[in-house]
Structure formats: structure tokens, C-alpha cells
Length: 465
Image 1 (cartoon, rainbow, N blue to C red):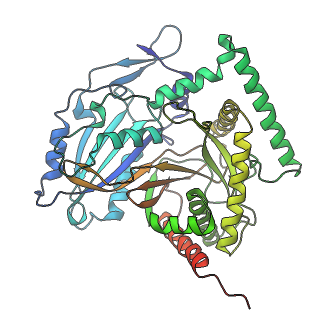
Image 2: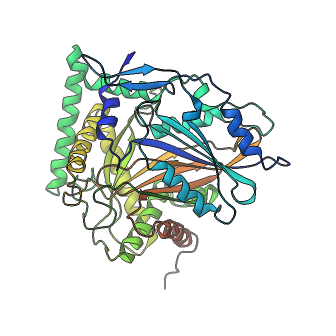
């Protein structure tokens, strides 16, 4: 048995029926040309024949250890307990119904008595489409790692007849290995790595000084302060069990044109659209803000030239734009914030950001476990992450994957999580929320409206008098 790391264990401790800790992906595919209507059913049956299961898909957590940390234990896997087939009825098999069905699959906690993953084939969708929903516990991998694993299991050719299920591939550089590496760095002093501890403590002290300067308003946007986001909005509160999901997409060529004309990054453009959409949504809900929206945002902590496997990230708080009706002003404000955040991240060692992430997450988790999230100030208004996907279309036995949408977990006190995902020339905005958040679909439409407004402001600026 392999020892369970502290960070692995944290995902189990934080998990509840209202807040499961798994990440998922919704793949929408179209049957190959001239394929029979039974294609998805046959695919499901073929999945069941791939009985060779590799780590981490053959592991369960073992809490019955007499001493020391809980451990991972490898077991025999019955694929019938992990792979499922569903067929939506005609008339209730459109996109909205698919999103609602996937959201219901996303709700329950994975059973710990067996390996913590599932794959669902969803058949009989519109115009010859079908879908695959797959989920895996966060202790196995994060969303970025799962996306990479999924990509490696797919083919880049429609003529490839081989099926390569994700569980049958020997994974290298897993998210678990990355988390262990982070943990090893964090506890380096306990193992005698005094120099590493010194740099970490110095980084934490420097980050603390930045926050103090921000508190007394001697700096601006070095990093947003925790617990200053407005708690009086529908976006925050005690996380509840129900889930809803929606997604919208914009052609990447449109995004790149704005980037080139404004010298902005993809994150600048995407967050500008989200900021405008969220302000409009909050105004519609009677909770308009006169202060910037604060998001939790993962940041890359690698130094230039670093060649480590996996993803090395921390989560920091970022103020978006002060309320404005001008999308170009909003873009510039957000660009200013993100550039300052990048300077701040580069000024301290990665371990300091990781420590900050853990401490801030701990406060939010305690409030959620004590059911105080409706009263306690939230860490931020929502979480926004960016997951890059394949630039070209991928296939499963000739079936073209036309869309791919990550579906993440909800952080403490946040009723909405947004994931940006780029795939095959499209930028998708995936929104996962509790079912108490009103009119989630309208928020998706507001993202598209905000993009149109930004594009119009850049391409057709008003003429000066």
C-alpha cells in the first residue's frame, strides 16, 4: 500500500454530501458518418471489455490503518460498478436536457468502498450526437491533469479504430505525484531542508507585507485582500447539494483578434466578458455592486525554464474592474490588475503562494463545515480557472468530439465555479453552480453579450466629436 499524503487526505476531510470533491469532464461527440444508431451502445459494451485497470483507477483509500496516515490500496476493479449507459428519450434529448442530466450525475459523492471514478455514456442526443461524462476524485488528480489524461486517451485521426480507455493507460506525472512534490517542499524543514524553509518563510513574510500595504492603501492591486468580497450576493453562501451546469462558446479567432488589437492576453479578454456578465447578472438579481468583483484564480507558479511534470499552481484573489459601462475601460482595468498580480507572484517563492492558498482555504473550509458560510465573509465572489485543451479535434473510434467541458467542484462559500476551456478553435465558458443560484443559463447568455459589446467597442470605437 502507498501512503496517502496530507494533501490527498485534505480532499476527503473537506468532502461532504453537499460538497463532493471530484472533478469531471463532459465530452459531446457525433457518431461517425454512416455509423448505426447503436454506435454509442456498442462503445459502452466495448468499454466493459477493457478490464486491465492501472493506477490510480484501481485504488481505494484505506482508513483502517492501525498507525500512521491512511493509505492507498490497490484492488480488483469491477467495471460494471464504474461504467454506465443512459439513453435520453426523444423530445427531452437536447442540449439543455443533457446539461441538466450531467449536473445530476455530478451531484453524488463517489463511493469510497471502490475506486473513485465513473464513466457514463449518454446516448440518443440531438442529430446523431452522444456524450460521455466522466468523473474522478480530486485526491487522484486535479482538473488540469484529468484534461491531459483525457486528451491522451483520444485519437487525432477519425480513421483510428482503437479504443484507449483512460483507465487502461499507464499514467505518468499524475496529479497525485504533483501534490506530493508540493507537500515535500512545504515540509522540507522537517526533513532538514533548512534553506528551503528559510526561503519559504521569507516569501510568506514578503507576501504578508504586500497584503498589509494593500490594507492601508499604500499599494493598489498587488493582490486582492481576502474576505473583502461582498457577501450580499447570490454568488456566495453555504454550498448546497444540488447542481446545475451550462456552457457557452466563442470562436477563438474572434478572441485572438481582440488580443492582437489591444495587446491583451486570453485571460484579459475572458475575464472582461465574465466581469461584465456578472455585474449585469447581479443587477438583474437586485444585488448590484458598487465595488469590484473579487475572484479566486489559479496562477502558474513555475519559473521560466522549469521542466517539472504536472501543474504547479496556487490560488490567489484578484479584483476585477470597478463597475463601468465601457467594456474597453473594463478590459484595461483588468489588464492592470492581472499584470500587478503577475509581478507579485514572481516576487515571492512558489511555496509562499502555496502556503497562502492553504491558509485561505482553511478559513473557508472551517466556515463551511460549521455551516457559517451564509454569515461569514466569503474568500471571494467566485472561482475562475483556465484549462487549455487540444487545438485540433479529437476522436473516439471515428466519432468526432465536437465539444469538451470541464465540470469542477465548488470551493467553500462559493455557489458558482467558472472554467475557461479552449478546444479546437473555440473558447468555452463552463458554469457549474448549486441549484439555488437563479437563472444560471441567463448568466451564460450575458457572457456572450459582454463579448459582443467588447468586440464592438474595439472594432468600431465611437468617433470623437
